[in-house]
Length: 262
Image 1 (cartoon, rainbow, N blue to C red):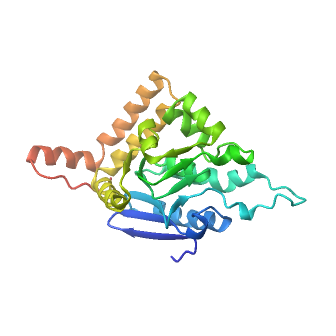
Image 2 (cartoon, rainbow, N blue to C red; image 1 turned 30 degrees about the vertical axis):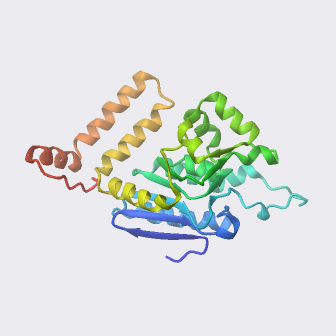
Image 3 (cartoon, rainbow, N blue to C red; image 1 turned 135 degrees about the horizontal axis):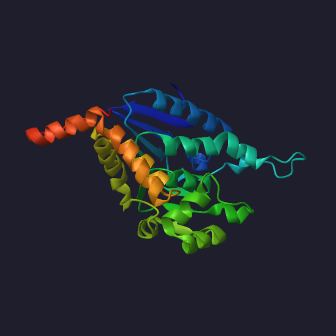
């Protein structure tokens, strides 16, 4: 499928979505949201895909909403809640619910909803030159696209409040130190590190990885008893999987496992 605002590729179990509006730092438009929905339809329907990577073209990962689509002088004000309901929130839910690892390769600035998009991914690699900015406070808005949910859980209440209220720029090195991201890497190493990580994940027992993702995400809102019950149920499912059988057989036969993600 051909797209205008993103580049979509799929090979060897890895689907890659590259935001592709470099002149606007890959900021979101209605057209980009429509193409992201179509790309996610492909990912969700293709059983061969076992890892999703999202990154950006040029010097930005994503600068959030393209404000040139918004007219502050318009007589009829835009309902931003409707925009979230129709575009951003479904995308974040799809990333969180996708039964496979989602990797963000943050190649440059990630601001506003672009930062929220990155933090919604399961593993975040960031180039050393990348920056994370909670830019909402600068225009009288609140962090959205899951920003107020992710930030306190990743960096703690005090730091999340400071970042949201002040809109300070966070370097990739600081983001790693704060626990916002998995790793900060040199700019020239980002592509190679992302490729190696995504290949590793795509060759892993990805059905089990999807269950791990589900359990850890659920734990943020569960008490211990509820989480223990969930672990029991998910472990039961994992124990009936072909990947578990293959993992045990490979261990016993002292050979490399060949997982199929089911």
